[in-house]
Structures are given as structure tokens and as C-alpha cells.
Length: 303
Image (cartoon, rainbow, N blue to C red; front, side, top):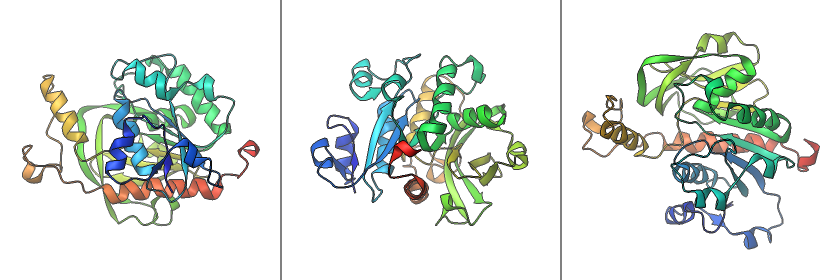
């Protein structure tokens, strides 16, 4: 079943070229089904790239999904054109009266800041609180996962002396959890962050379950006991060359960012990176969509 996105969204042509099924408004309303209503609260500077990555994995679901793009109102970045933002994105006031099956909140390259020093921290807290009662499930990625763990459970983060950067092997700690159904014992996941959370605080918390971890980069995937909050601290949604783009950007800016670990064949940046996380990327998001589909009421007003 296709994903419904605006006709002129830049992601449309990319997804069509990849044979991801999409549909327009007129086609969607003819189908006698209720689509899953999913919000993408996009905090990343390059919103076009991120919305394409998320639409790609949601579009591989057999269910019809209606994607709503959300941006901050208290802060407008400079890396995405205002024309794009005002054409395709809504603000919280536009959707506050609605209910949704799920919300995905992305990371943001602001991890060096204390949460309280982030310009849109109050707005983010308001939306996370709203999502508890207006979205059946919440999926937090990278910095947003750290922010939500801090806000809801007082799990702190700490700044590293170096950057966790590359595609690192992770192991499963729970082989029965629905969010990792079908996963292998070892999972490769792109990682790109200067911070990590207190993994022991997660283990000690009665309402949190640590699902995936890495010996090199720490906690990766966490859920709450209800399985309605998902915290992915890394980037399974990344494309093949996303880490390459970050490395090239940092190098061009004069930053001494190390070569991404376990990424380039023979550790040579002239080689095309291998993409060895695609299957688990799709599984993670499809498992989440299935959890949402199985749990959310048909009438969202009863949430």
C-alpha cells in the first residue's frame, strides 16, 4: 500500500525512481481504508534529505500511511528554504486539535548544548507531552531520543571527548521484543554523535527496556514497557552516503573528524561505502508500524 505525500514534495521523484509506492490525494480518498496517520517532526537542518529517508521506509509498509510534516514554530533554520517549509510543513498550532497513530521526532545537530539551552526546548517539551495523549506511539531518533529520555525519565547524557562515527556492530539483549522481530544477532547501525546516555540508568529504570547495545558506542535502542515509546539513539534511516556527506562536510570545514569506522571498504574514502544496514532499517520501521497498527484504535478520537 502506498504512502501519501504531497504531489510536489521533492521526495516524490526520488521515491518513484526507487519504485516506492506513493499516491496522490485523489487516489487515496477512493480507497475504503483508514490510513495510519503519522507525523514526522523534522528537526534536522536538511529537511528534504530526512523527509525522503523516512518516507522511503514508511513507503515500504503494506499499509496506507498519511504523512504529515511538522516543523518548529519557535525556530526556523537556514538550511531549508522558507518556500519548502511553508509549502509542505505545518506547525503545532495547525495540528494540536488532531489525533494521530504515531509521531516520529528526528535528531538535530545540537548535542553540544544543554537541553534547556536549545532555542525550541520549551516547544519540544510541549509537543512531547501532547504526543502522549494525541499519538498512540512515539518514535524518537538520535538527539530526540536523548531529549525524550531526559524529559520523561531523567536519563542524562554526557559529552564525549571524541565522536562516535561510523557503522558499528550492535547486539540484541532481548530476543522476544516485537520491535526487533526478525533481527539478526548482530546488527550494523550508522552512528554519528558526540554524546552518549547513561546506559546503567536505563537498565536500572523499571519502565525502560534496553534492546540493542554496542560495546563501542553504548545503548542504541530502548523502549518503554508499553512498547509505545521507541528510542533509537543512532541512524538506521541513513542512506548509503549520509556518513560520507557528514565526513566531507566536516573535513571541508577544517574539523578533525576521524574517518567513519567500518564504513569504507579497506578504510579508503575513495571507495564506495557498503550499505550493510538496509534490511534492519526496513525491519525496524515496519515492526514499529505493525505495533502501531495492532494497538491503535480505529477511531482515533478514543485515544
